[in-house]
Image (cartoon, rainbow, N blue to C red; front, side):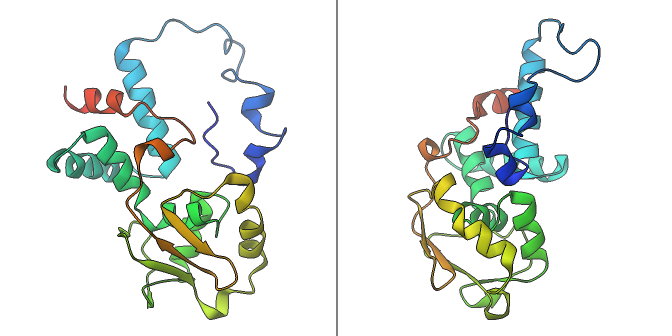
Length: 193
């Protein structure tokens, strides 16, 4: 399944999933039926890899979502979308979450005027994420900002392209998290065993 991990390449015909959508190797096309546990594990691995998390980090996010009031699966995805690296990717400053993580680690972003270099920083509604003055001439970031309209901007973030800043208006809603579509209930079932 296409996870859009390679940035713009996943939007072109060069995407590996489009060319060959079966597992590699001699026996890639003849797979056995997958069990319920296999489906649950696959879904968890998909979400983990999409957001670029380790198992212990993902488990901590799940436990935090489980403690909060509401639907655990939806809360898990909302917590993951509120990460600074995910917000930077959604605003279009980077073409992939991995690139966003790298840019944040290098100290290119300010949150409410303060330098933040932790990709897992939880952004709240009303926070302003902006590119530092020194970083505004980086060609890679400008190319990513030009391509953001192709990917689309979610309604819960607002981007001021000319000022290189974006605002988180509200918490993300489950209906807007479409790329790729997750079945978060399978993850909840997996961890509740």
